[in-house]
Amino acid sequence: MKAPLIKQVTEIVRGAGHHVLMERGTWDRVDGELWKHSRFGVVRASLLEALGISQTTTYRQCQPGGRWRHLLPGVVLLTRSLPTARQRIEAALTFAKHEAVITGFQAARLYGLRTGPDPQFVHLLIPHESRVLSSGFAVLERTRFLPKAKCRDGVPLAPPTRAVLDGVRRIRELDAVRALLIESVQSGLTDVDSLRGELDVGTKRGTALPRRVLDEIGLGVRSVAEADTLEIWHQAGLPTPHRNVVIVDADGAYIGMPDTWCDEVGLAWEIDSNEFHYSKDTYARTLERNSRYASVGISVVQTLPSRLRTKPDAVIAELRAAYAAAQARTRPAVSIKTTGAT
Picture 1 (cartoon, rainbow, N blue to C red):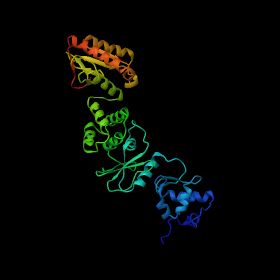
Picture 2: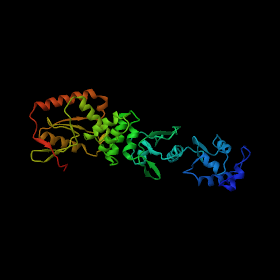
Picture 3: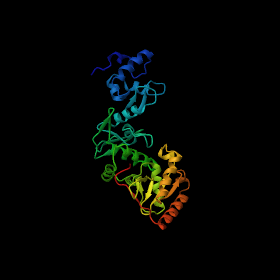
Picture 4: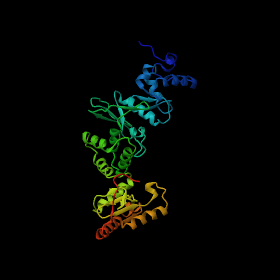
């Protein structure tokens, strides 16, 4: 019979199937030895047995009043405290076995993204032939196309594009989908073409909202608030707008960069609030901007962001009225600057 690895504690923790009382210093020595064979305190129950800890002892120590905690089937945490995010990840990987990779919101967090829901579970991709089933906080998804893992701090992660989409296709909150996809693109972690490509080759389940958001991003949307404005603009039945483009006069002089621009009639729509743009522009600068618009004949609609959701019908009516008025007058001699802002 193979000798246990922790020889000095074998006689203490083993017995004839009975719970053995030990002094605190003795258990501290045992835990210290076992911790060396764990990942952040997470270890398989089968490894504990190989190290000389009986199944009965492991079971009892995971019960109320014991020193350890049972996390997942066959997976133990060598402390009674609640597991940290990293310990939950290690437990899920230990439970899943084989070539599992972390994906979804948990992977997005490890890639540095901060928007989107807080991870409520650990989402893993496993080979299609694996027979391990989801349990507790470990959600296992079998796939025939297991991506090559990217390691961050020793954790195998699905590539950013796959990880982000695996997260958003499991939720139905439009704002949460918008926030995470917009951040992932703006951070440079992925791009719209890569996201579209992944949606085209992957499962079609839960892809309607991501596709809608990618269309918004393609039109220049850079925040959830800007997505709200785009949605209301379309509800108003107005021509497809431009987002955050630089407008110049006939001589090429800078006029402004409206949040939304209708080039057909020379109509600007501004959502004037630090709440959404995190801007430190003063009221005086807003007046200067509006004066530049007026000097060249640009019609402008200003809307408080709170009205986008509290009074959308009123905002739609204002936009339609402004569009009709702008259409009735001569279009101002302004254009979109194509070489970037100055």
